[in-house]
Image 1 (spheres, rainbow, N blue to C red):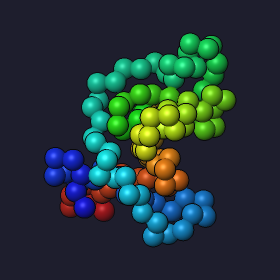
Image 2: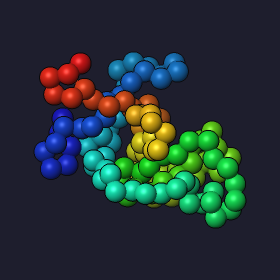
Image 3: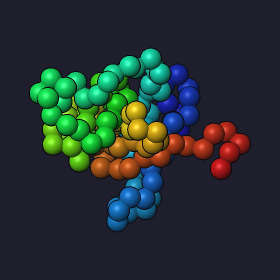
Image 4: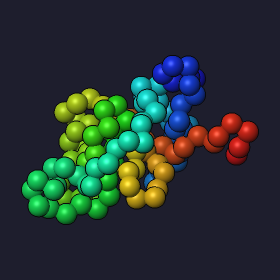
Length: 116
C-alpha cells in the first residue's frame, strides 16, 4: 500500500487494549506526511478557554493541534468529528503514535526501510 505521492504509509495499526489483532485502518493512504514547521504552544481551544490539557495531537490532514481524550476539552476528537479528518498523531510529547478516530485504532510508525 502506498500513500500520497507514491510514498509508503508512515503508520501501521497496532494492537491496543483488547482491540482485535489484524484490524486495519483504511485511512492510512489519506494521512499525508506532516511538515515539521508547526510551532503551536498547546491546544489553541484550551489556551483560549484557559483550561488545562493532558496530551496534544496534531491532525495529519490539516495540522491543527488539539488536546487528547484524556483532557477535559477533548478538542482533537472534536476536530476529527467536525472536519472528517480521520488521523491525528502525538505532538510535542516525545512520543510517536497516532490514532484513527474513524476506525478507533492505535497506530505506530512503520519500520524504516531495512529496519525492524
